[in-house]
Image (cartoon, rainbow, N blue to C red):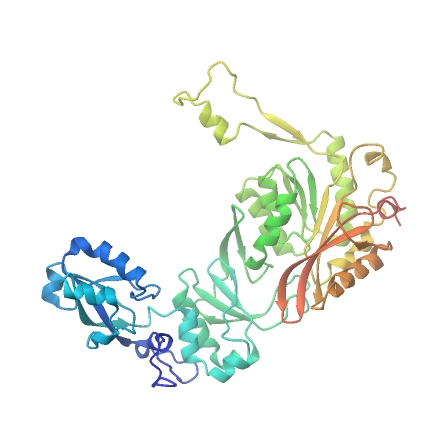
Length: 480
């Protein structure tokens, strides 16, 4: 069943059988294969390790992932006596001594090892997802569409695929193999609309390709547990690194305004490190799960959920934070785990003379340090609403205090382009929305914007995060 049975190199020898089955039909039994190898039978089992090292240095061992290098002797009687074998490279033939290396020949001559035939049996469970799909999908289909469809967004037990039209006839087959080869995956779905265009809440229509239609999931990210109905909210596991990057920028005791917070992938971990977060999402379902995840991760003192239009929430958040600070609102925290352990009576490091520290009060500052706007399809269009953010409150910022105006982190899409063309397109769009000409540079510098590529979304589409400090003429402009 091989495309080219004459091939006898290692690549083809250890490749699964090529199967061109009917669409959607997976016969796992067809993936069984026997590979004829040679093995070095070690006379004294105490010498297994030494011979393994010798043959490894000699490049004579089988180099194949997920296959044990040491196996019982193929003769059952010898195997019952504890005789072990080392699997040899396919170029070494038991019946052809001319293929044996000098090390093997010397070992046979000294009767320390013997070279015997060994039939290695491989079945469906051995092959990876990529191996199986290469066997099932026609080569011309793979070549035309950049290989096999392997990428997916995972939310708990759900794998969310976005299959190209050419692969749709094989969709059930693809999903079935994906579940077989990923123990954590129980359900596979395929998107049938574009996120962000058909739904203002970034949800999407989907079809279940395999497994139960159960999208109530649990996901862990940045040391936090999130529970949600994946069909009702937005979640993208591929953004975990971007979430972590910004969370690492935020400092304990600062205030962050998350304008499009979703279920809390920025807000909840930030709250866990002692950052105050005013977290908002326009989707009522996202707001519900955001509120639950705040409680689930015990960050109620730091993270406050809201369900508003992000355009109006931008200035309202600034007002609410200021009001909370003027009222003296604060978070209270006790000793951390390390401090508690060090002062436990049974601890050898306990210092009885040092009193246990009392609760620590962290006041809410009067100003917001960072705004996060992770709605790439349209977040830039919200930037005009920063005009008048701190109208009449110039005294809160430099030069009157040491506090700088907030930094905005806005996510967006832009076409792939050469050089700085994509970065300049993002810069120009931001400049047009806020009415101030920015240049590429550092976010902390006046009238500069830093544009960072986050990920490839499609062959000609990129996601970026642009960060800039709100210009004074925008922040202190009169509100309309």
